[in-house]
Length: 275
Image (tube, rainbow, N blue to C red; front, side):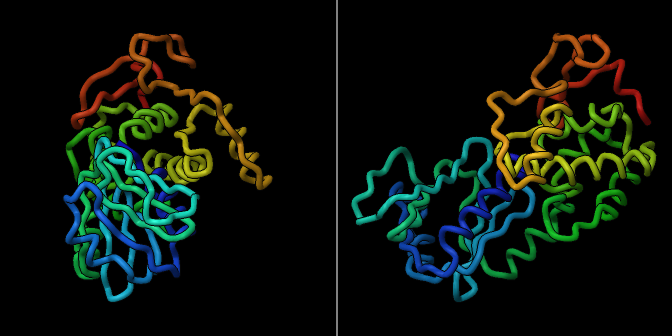
């Protein structure tokens, strides 16, 4: 499932392509014909994301709400649109202007909602490290009162928005945190370290389009961002994610895996003992 950095980048790209325009909206697949008709011809005001949710505001208080789920994609093509652009695959929603065509395929959710409904959705979500001025205290209150393991809590979008399986496995390793430590047993300093790591790592994911967590690559991308250039990583490395049975890059122990919160968690039992 796309994690928060992917949705943030998508909102940024939609905003750049459509802000101030009045795209034609259609549903080649047919499943979103009514919703597309509501949006077609309205001015695109702006796009934003909160965790794994994408919101695009159109004039007249109409909001497009998208959750990509496990298989959804939302691609933006820079090509002239003359009304005859071929449809590839099951396109739920197409937004088209003379300069851009954006096709949404396979989302878990696609709906036109009101501002009040947007507020209802976002009020249920935890802080998103990529949003302006997020409040990590809101997440800490829930974590510090919970008997659930921290690996499960990090995947709970009501606790922390935008974090998926890759980031939770990698950040817990980077901070040497026992993934099965109950939230209420976690020290505040440990939570602060997790939060600050996410605040640093997610923007690097936005910059590269990849989840960057191994320190050598983090340093490369950080330097590129500071210099205003783009670092292209041919291969994304990971400390533990999808490395079950392989040797830990730090201590040499074998990486373990177990299903936690419906997804395969990966961790090193020797390195990750921090309370």
